[in-house]
Image (cartoon, rainbow, N blue to C red; front, side, top):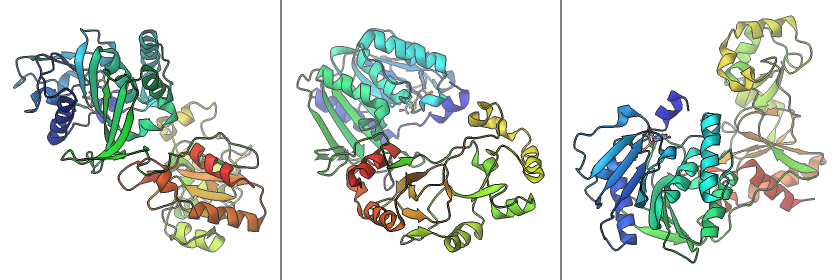
Length: 435
Ligand SMILES: C[S@@+](CC[C@H](N)C(=O)[O-])C[C@H]1O[C@@H](n2cnc3c(N)ncnc32)[C@H](O)[C@@H]1O
């Protein structure tokens, strides 16, 4: 893993949340002292320093030696510098902690494969290559605890529905352990855009009971029947199908290079159609009641306000002298984007068709913004593209059905107010609306 990703994952747990996790762990075992505690990704070992902690022995494993401070550490606690995923000490009665959050794409592929192999060898379960590292840590925590052990971890709530964690959930179901997942009703990590949750996995459980709920920082829990937090089940994920489907927005590789403002377009003498196409990277600036992205709306809400809204057409076979000059002016900035470095010609992306509808992936309230794409704008980044050949009236009807659908009741929280619909969940809704 790159040093920058190791550093970025070092989000320390607030002390009151450390105490709360200890309260929850102790409540599972009637307050009895834990004989041995393991903390994978221990940081400064704050789980050993908590006044609430009750253990006979604590071992923390931390990769970054700069994080490790022995001063003030209780005598029975020890922090080992090393890779928590390679840890092979005696099995613990409790594994508690806050594992790192690092997307699979940011992990060293060789390390990831070795870890997935090892976890598979021990658990019989092959996690997906796309699983976030915190999912790998949770499985490691389960493997490094005793058969009657307990795992209490602070992790993002998303694993309860993400397809990338499906194998991990299936493993838990197979083992029939009891699982409790409580998402926080407050921003535990204000600068991090995910909803935090506490997971309690009790290996003494044999019935495979799962419960979901919301927890306050003071420890009050409100339970739900479904992870969506409502009586409705979470939207399923569907592959694209037949005559209407959604695609993720285009990722040409670095919007600062590929998507220009009107001012930049004029500066480089780039012509509409020949050198650039209209595009949207976000629907945030559209008024809530906007139903159609027409030329006037595009001009007013994107072009005139200086938004990045012109996608350069470096996907084309031939570039005008102006476009070539612009691409030369990029210099070596493209080297920062793996999408560019992975292409034989860094600028030549594969284009997407202009969609019939544009749908935002993140939203507050009941449903994402949905607009009919009258100007043929390309969906870029977090804007989803809905492709269909429907007639104009049918398209308007589909758009209004999407706007009226209460997505919020069928999604897990992304961050406190913001919901995020996955593209395959949008496909599930589109399929339901069918023809
Ligand atoms: C989210 S922080 C939590 C730190 C501390 N446990 C806390 O609750 O404040 C995750 C920690 O895991 C460490 N880490 C990341 N990858 C690791 C690995 N492979 N082995 C051990 N520690 C790792 C990071 O350096 C970081 O300190």
